[in-house]
Length: 309
Image (tube, rainbow, N blue to C red; front, side, top):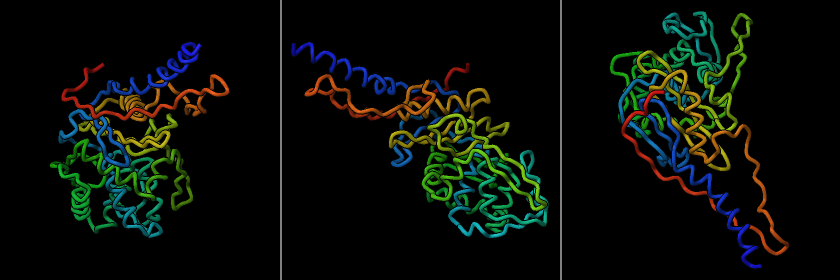
């Protein structure tokens, strides 16, 4: 009789442990460089070619945004100058001579990633793009991102401009911890009002965040040289993680980022809505199933690219 009562408890414990056992095998992620870290501690959960220097596209706007947020004074008026508009292809086509609140431009930068906005914020901050780049590099080093060199605030191609997945994860952790940036990065749509009264709805470029309830934001990036890049954050049941995927493809960047976040958070790959956390099951009035602590991720390493699909 005791054995009969023990078997259901044993089976329940085994089933509870299955997700944790699966979590030891990260999903295949296409990309030149990949890293996943704990957003709070910085612990590396998985990495592949994470120290490889390469262009990172607009993901470096996370550093631009961090500097602007740390400067504060978000009600400050930023006057648009003609030089700000020399930043194709993605711009808001702001009219020189008009002005916008720093906070509104900061929000537009993280939602839609316009290059002219990045230039305007950087120039307004430091007096010139070159001056802002110096500040970017100094702040990056303070964050431990010592294998990076930035030339402009928007990530458009430039000689001697590069970073690594590891460095971008350090910059991303600082941005994630910033109280001003956190809600902005989770903004899916922004009604942007031009000075002439026109309102244009900006949709967040981060499809992973738009389509997955556990994703809490961060930043996209793309240039012909950098390929498709994405820094994403996710949260579930008290666990917070950040993934960086560099040099991927349009077809894989968003789905792969969602998969690696699910793995790092201990979520099943096919969950469409948040799992329901229920109380322990009872087998009798005096006997209930034992609680099982989540299994801690082990650090994973890989040194070669995944085979292209």
